[in-house]
Length: 168
Image (cartoon, one colour):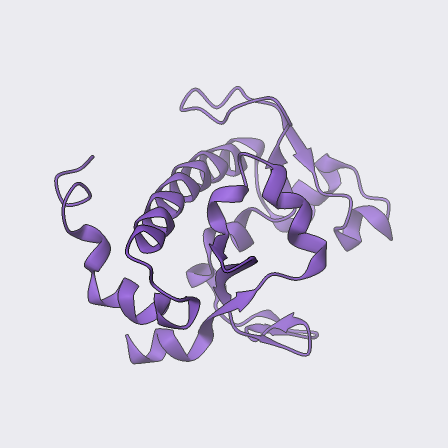
């Protein structure tokens, strides 16, 4: 766990993420504390993820967080990822391949070597993970865990006590 702790942090969210707070699908990943919002993330250096190396990509490879595995794809607003894999996809316009290179969704899929089916399965997994993340952060809030204590609290497994341990 010490190795994991060297690459993750709890940080106050950047202004560009504040719009997520009003999005019911994204809001659960943010931790409210004394008027500010925080998130658990890979450590950032100079505004970029510590695992992202220019010209080499992500050093975590297949071990990178699920959110990074699905980027730049998301489910269309108003739709819900499901097991049947028939929900509509959209692509984030901030992605360099879209904004600068003018790639279509099909071009990006081809460039990344993914199929829509693989992306949909990963997005469905991500939806479940976001919901669980939200339940864990809610429990941390109920226990009044300060942001700087979240990582240790998480690794000590306190959130499994009570209803979480019973699968609720």
